[in-house]
Amino acid sequence: MAESDDSLSRMPSSQPPEATLDVIGGRLAEVGGHEVVRVLPTRARRTVGAWCFADHIGPRYVTENDGENIAPHPHIGLQTVTWLLSGELVHRDSLGSEQVIRPGGLNLMTAGGGVAHSEEGVPGFVGSLHGIQLWVAQPSSTRELSPAFEHHDALPEISLRNAAATVFVGDFGEAGSPARRDTEHAGVQLTLGVGKTLLPLETSWEYGLIMLSGLAEAEGEKLAPGSLYYLGGRRDELEISTLESGTAILIGGVPFQEKVFMWWNFVARSREEVEAAYRQWRRDDRERFPAVSSRLARIPAPRPMWLTGEN
Ligand code: MN
Image (cartoon, rainbow, N blue to C red; front, side, top):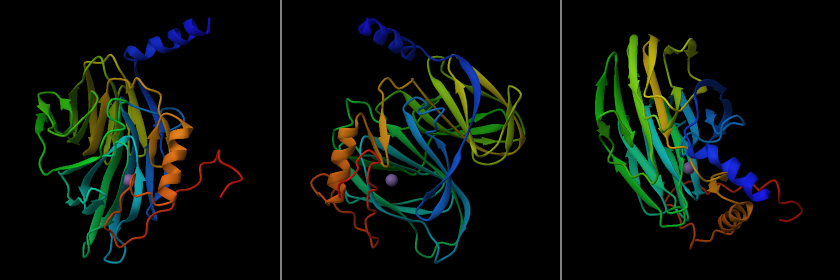
């Protein structure tokens, strides 16, 4: 009986979900001393394809003494995808990478079994900082393998009616990004001009839309910054009417087939895996999390809430 229940509950996940347009409100979170709007994960939605995390950063005016300050911290089992609309950041990681990112470029770090990194302001930079940081859950086939980092300065762009699409990960329309991906998923920046735009979609994928600026409308719903608009699947296109020009991020992919367990900066499958990573970071185990060359002190891991009465 338990077995058949189990197989029944797993069956729907292999099919793309029905088309929908669910408005899922984001919430304020604090990263490196600054507020961000976290639109994924939420109670209502944990993943869109393999995408499992999305922080809308800014727009925020950065002064010389008030740059980003995200000190070294660890990750496991995920890729970080950093994408800016304005401003500059420098990424440093435990592989020895040091890479400045600017609008139009992609920083993609694959954590695998363990990596640490910092994301800091570029000294002397003054101006607007605006962007998004996304995470992609790695599948079991790669999530315990070696970490990696790659940077792409320029990514393919396609023209749509009243819009341009820059494909930073995966395939969209006729364009494909050279960036690594371990599952079938895509991430696209949509630069929306006023008027109607038709987005080409994959029927076997599910999608979500995040407005970073501007105002649009789809299927009678207003689209504005601060929420995730979950579109479901079984769509070969979506029409968006842009009322006020702006920028949106489209994320999508084959529904993720594994149940992830996320805690802090770790994407795992169980508490035990998270506890192991937590303890290794806490005792500065450099076999798992080598040092990052940063002037900032490592961020201490908060204790998992299910661990009580120990130090
Ligand atoms: Mn990070």
